[in-house]
Length: 475
Image (tube, rainbow, N blue to C red; front, side, top):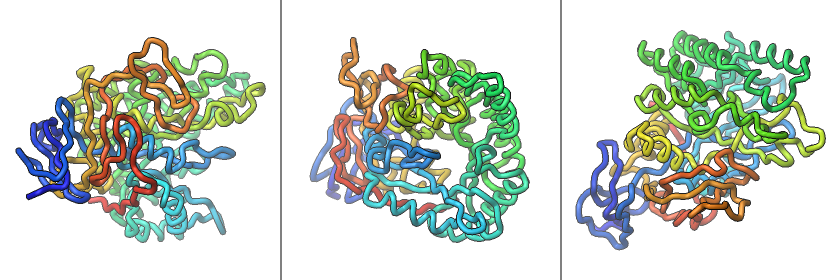
């Protein structure tokens, strides 16, 4: 058979482990894995790893947050993702309340898809957010699942939080429809109490953000959410776990036979709450919820991730400009930490950070790296067979990853970095990166989406609007 493209001389990281073989691509799919394949065109991957395109299950592009909108739109955010080796993202639909406080789900899904169509340069899926558990809302869930959106996010904090009664009712409806519930788990009552105490005492600086949301608030909410999901018989996915104790709660539930999954993010593996003590207002750059924790939580999360007790690494990419958004445009009258938009950029460097500080540091194998960044997110969220693995018949989303390419991370507006032999100028539409100055060893040399090269040597070369909406069905 003559393939359109053959990738030669690389080490393929497959579900069966690393193999030295050729990868054949015909049209948009992987057509063969073997030796001495014949192709119309060849790509040399000598001394490089050939991996599936990354699947980021948790991003927030073009997301309204009060008076501001996250700074990466569907185009800029997906270009940055592609440059970092991610070829699939799953974002969120956030319905707005209409008549009688209801939020029509199918209308919101159609509107969110319309925002992405013609803008996303990689493939994308959508999670549906449930902002209430009214009967009319829950009645729409089967139709939303049928439309290819089988994952539903709920909150135990913020203004859209669900009470325990509403939460278990929503979980029951999602489970019966064949869906999965994603939970942002923090104890809202405890957080509100601590925030009020801090503000009353005049403690308004960014350094007080983590004090207002201590680890116990996450751990309790995770355990409660898992208990309610178990009662409802609904699969549960706990997002952005920041503590070792929270991750251990998911591992314990899985050990009891519950269908539960845990996600963490690079910021919770690599950054600590020391970032909030930066001079002036700089700590605002690192405000996200749950907040950054202690070094011992970093260590615990790495251990649990490496041994399989956490299933995925997403980014929770939710960027806001430091100047004009994090400070609300008033640097002489900075807002208290309670008013600072929560979220950080991170969509581009995920694969490189996990390879450098995970694989190279001996915290995980190269197979585990691909599992948590590619294969498991695809499998959990209904994309197995199409995305997340090098397998015949799968979409030819392929990354040629250079394990020896070194560089220092900096945001796109930086022009130089002293002492750096190579600089990775990140493409995220933000005026900072939380990983400024991080030295990585390992970076994508080439990214393909469905058989088409879209990134070469760190720069986007694909055309506009190449991304497609992915209808998903959870097994």
